[in-house]
Image (cartoon, rainbow, N blue to C red; front, side, top):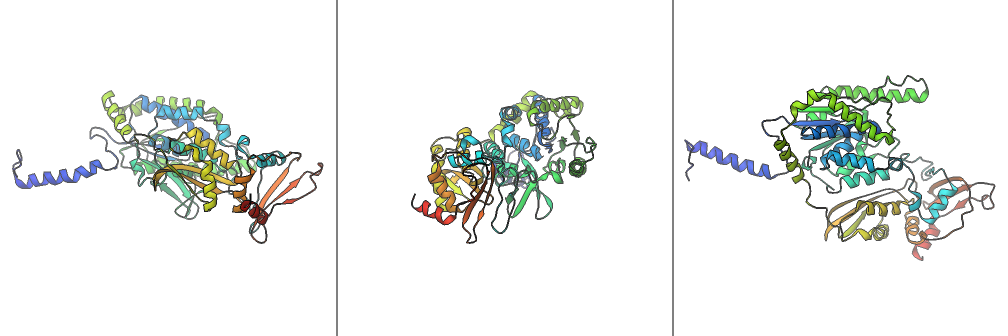
Length: 486
């Protein structure tokens, strides 16, 4: 064949090779390169708990001024905000999500009272302090103060279109988040797998939320060593890194007490790690968050506004990366095109993490969402009804390919020190709707196992009530008989 306008066959052959090689690369899910006329921009969002909402304001300012974000890396709350943006949400949609979330409920450790079974409602009234100790293999404490069920529902909603990815580069905006592995004592950059699980891992505050286990790694909040992952963003093939530091200043708290010294020690360690990472950033934004603490969740709007104002104060540094209107529209269109066209409609439920019989019982509880698009509010309602039995620490959900089509995959983790599996089956089948007289007062509850390994639950009750002088022991053998013959 001839190659017009090319002086020689070797050059023609080289051109053909270039076309053949480039075509599959263009069709793949690899990160889209920024036009040669502009630099690729990476955004690093840091941890700071409630202070992190300032980063939503920074995102809004960058969007309003047509500054594209070609890659995003985040730690802790920055990992959740960055993951939301990477999943295709706009800055305004993220702001609306923050505004419409009841953050006081988000960090409630116990399952909502209205979702509890009758028996568990009685327990909640009788034992206001829901402290549970495991007795199997000796007394043991729970894995965390909060099972993070509400956090799980939030990140499951955000990540619903992306149940399992070979690479987070396949998201509308390439994404990385940082966690810390307790087994290897090193930072872990999460770049593939379940997006919701990655976001949960990066914000698993030690002792507050349970760690996330991925590939034999026990992962907690990544802010311990890399609170502002500008170094991670730099490795995402970008030319410019914009970093947002919302961490606390260890010198801001001058109190001298056991708790304050411990808190300042952790804050200082995190600040040292952030300082090293920020050396990789070209632009560092440090919002003025004086008066806002890591638990100022109800002041999220104030934090957002302060973040916006900080970006505005750095306009001279940032506006040189702004695009003209048509170029930014093309960038947004390419980003939208990488989002799934529509939410999948599950045709079955797959339950994991519990025995087969219990899987069937839970699947029946969740069956009403089959055959129609998932409504996150309806799904959350179903999940909270299951966790209302207090038999499960956490229930997560996603949609993934199943044997007969899209399936709703439900991951279940039994509660710490929970009673035997048979007891949980019996609880789901027979206890819902059972009426009891509630005449008991305050006390505490202990769960564990008998010497034979069967579950039991012991309840200590107040001595000033008629029924309060007894210690109840509900043993697994009786539960098993009742489960077999309800």
